[in-house]
Image 1 (cartoon, rainbow, N blue to C red):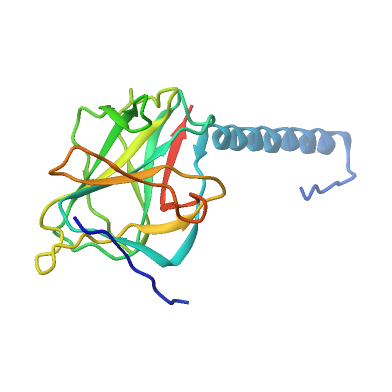
Image 2 (cartoon, one colour):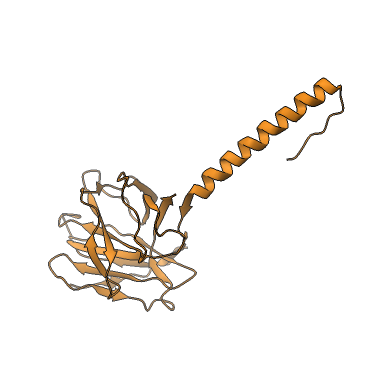
Length: 211
């Protein structure tokens, strides 16, 4: 299998009103309800955690031939032992309407590679536009293990009838080193990539988890 790196040149506020005691009481009650509403919203934000959004590297792109799998490991402390809500992927090119791909979720082995598959139900999706696409993972008991989780995108054989190329997951720059990998589905061995700009370049994939 040949892997090509293709370079592109692309360029409160708070309003105080003096009034009667009755009016002041009404204002206090209103203020209370506003504060309670804000707490509720804050609580919701705390309950949902999103992993880092990388900056787009327009001159980096992975071009692979199907069938193939490309994935990345997520083991940030703030997401472990939490329920996986959604996976968000940045596609550089729009998929054809009839093409679908799979998302596979694995625990991480002692060799820091995908080990046991966690999703018993098939997760098949299609991207509907170029850019960030959000894919809900509707499995209530899927909790991210303490070692983290490996998210793998499985491209089927017929992604492009003419060339066999998969449509591309964009590459982005992260603030810290990322561990990503790929393999042809006909082989068992993963090829590990960690050399791009001190390992900070990787597929643009994010997770949304909830308490």
